[in-house]
Image (cartoon, rainbow, N blue to C red; front, side, top):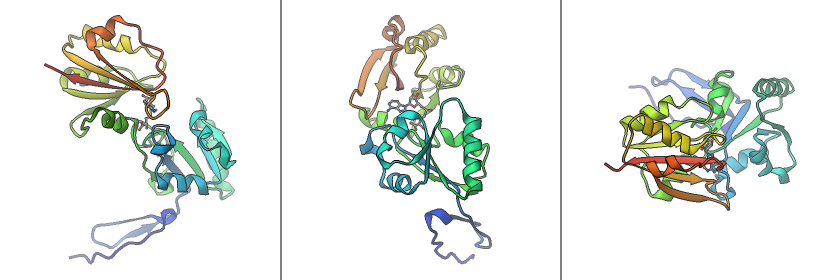
Length: 238
Ligand SMILES: C[S@@+](CC[C@H](N)C(=O)[O-])C[C@H]1O[C@@H](n2cnc3c(N)ncnc32)[C@H](O)[C@@H]1O
């Protein structure tokens, strides 16, 4: 039996050990990826806040960075400039400056971690989890999510969304802020989907948060496009 001893690591030196206790990889993580939750500061964890406070440079979307304006950090704004962001991170690394990337919700759920993992090894990424918008939507509706299919139409085509709703009783989807939610309902109906309740959970944790319940057919005849941030919960009521 391998001897299992406690592996104590500092956040910046987290290690990965093989099950036979032979190999310990202790690395220094140069990029911290912080999940900041759905937007409201009350959903920011203590771990996230501590990482942000000690960061030298913050990278994130404008709205996320604005939450921490008072900390007066150097910032880089993400806006369709991911290659520039990579160059910026590498430049800071050359100067031995660790960067902190802010991610909405949890970084690993349809978030920036996917992109960062394509460019950096896991050894250089310290990920601080956050409360996802999907978690908050489910909490608001008192719904479990271990039995749901999670999908997204944000920045990707709708095929996975449509197939998921056709074949599963509980589907939770992130939406594209610029696309029509009624159009999504029409696409589902055109594919033969019926008897569904749809909850649009909008701007969760912000002062203008609102949750609206529709029948699928009802949503399809409206023109609901103006919502900026939405989690769509689709339940089969058959
Ligand atoms: C790029 S994805 C990031 C998701 C994030 N990683 C998470 O765990 O919530 C952005 C999408 O998340 C959803 N979203 C993020 N914040 C939200 C909020 N406060 N209220 C409702 N939906 C939100 C919207 O569907 C938005 O288009």
